[in-house]
Length: 266
Image (cartoon, rainbow, N blue to C red; front, top):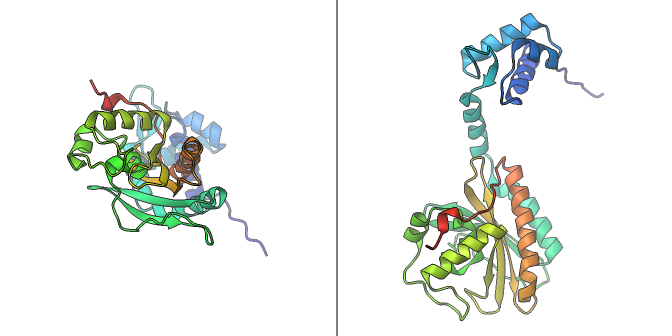
């Protein structure tokens, strides 16, 4: 036997009215809400008054229209903070690893930069292993660049170990070059590591955003250079960028427009 959940009743009507008001940023009058919800005007007025008393909606004194209040946003933030980013990312990471055949990892932003928290690898294939719990080296990894590319330069500079260590021949080792690199990361939406930390390893990573447009994590893909030629990095970059957007969407996040305003080198 299939049970059908009724949308009628005081609670259902109240939620329908609240959802209707939240959907219109310009505000709605009682009559407009009643028309949209197909509810009695008097009932709608009582519901809106109750929501106003509870702090969920606000009425404009001039237009008499109701709008959602910041209290609704605070509830949403509480819910989003409780989301498990690893649990949300895991299916996307698994699909990406299967599609690419490469190792896929997840790193979360921390006060001191970031930390690797999850990985997906393909059995029976030579892949790059990421040490869970380790911190990415900011200037020499795609992960480090992706986690910090949207930060203010003062914050990034405070986290950099100076002088910048040159691990390989392709490691970025000057501040000005690193600034320029972060500008490119923001503009294209993903970061790359062209054998910059370890010879024969190439990586790509893209940032994941929360509801406020702040980077909270990144998803990356890595593999041996013998299999990942330099020309393939742009393809990998687009793949991790698409994955990051999917995880951002699942987390209720906001993906901002790319740009480089905070990292000008002048």
